[in-house]
Amino acid sequence: MKDLVVAHVMHSYLTQSETFIWQYLHKFERIYPIVIAEFTQNLDQFPLPSAKLYLTHGRRLTCRWVIDNWCRRVLNQPFGYSQRIIRKKGVRIIHAHFGPLGCSYLPISLSLKIPLITNFYGYDASLNEFIDKNRDSYARLFTEGLYFLVEGPSMQEKLISLGCSEEKIIIQRIAIDLEQYVCKRHSWDGKRPVRLLFIGRFVEKKGLEYALRALANLRKNYSFEFRIVGAGELEQKLHWMAADLGLSKQTVWLGIQPHRRVIEEIQSCDILIQPSVTASNGDSEGGAPTVILEAQACGVPVISTNHADIPYITVPNESALLSPERDVDRLTDNIRHLLDNSEAWYQMGKKGREHVEKFHDVRKEVVALETIYVGSLFL
Image (cartoon, rainbow, N blue to C red; front, side, top):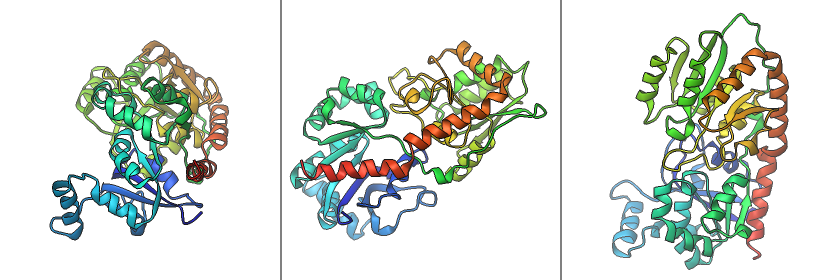
């Protein structure tokens, strides 16, 4: 089936947090993937052969720019240039990443009679204002689209509540390349500060403020260093909060880091803290943060919450200690438990690695996704 060309459509190839898309793209064996995107970023981290990458917007007065503008302004076809690419490359399946792209490419799917598969990831199925604005578009997408992929059962229930037929929803797990992650035996000699780590955007749903509040409860009795990778709209507020809570000496703000450096931070930390919550505007992880899988792959114990599909990608009470969202007292207790019981780190890490190997190995999951593609041609 190497002649089976699948077009992966997305706004950007690829944002720093979308490693879960790249993991699949460079592991396909039975199909030929191409990417259609509006612009590119981070190509040094997520390399893709130029023959597989097509941009819908070109530089001013280039051929691509002229055709794109003609389609948009004269023919009133916002995605007319994408349609030309899909025809030219002999695409047989369109895989839209995020709900809005599914809506945008549905007319092309119907016009060319090409199956449309749409992946939902998070904000596209949880952000209240966004859902209200696109409710009619989603209703049509759920009716006309072929399949809808989600990361786990929590996301599946969300799509059902939005009106998608359960028969059209397929759980396709987040996958990572386990060869990139070395599983170490994490231990502590009691002579150095415990290395705690958070990775994520500084937005409400990531719950970093609750990690800071929990650690403030422990700072007087424990020696730790809280390393924070990320940036975002709440950065100044979070810096002030850390200072007000007396955590200035314990926190290390690392900013945005390339994925290679992120992996290094995970492998050198003792515990990952990732207390995700549902934001006040409804935004949620949808599935679960990929960094939790990466930490388990490295044998790192996880502290997190019973949010979205996080219980689905961990082994609660074995590879991860989970608490209710925004429950600072329970979060504090879970962190304290691991600080007091460093001998448990190894078994937790071992269980996490086993779980990822069994359910989230990209070499296994890519076969499942390719099977979905092939099967969609015979419906």
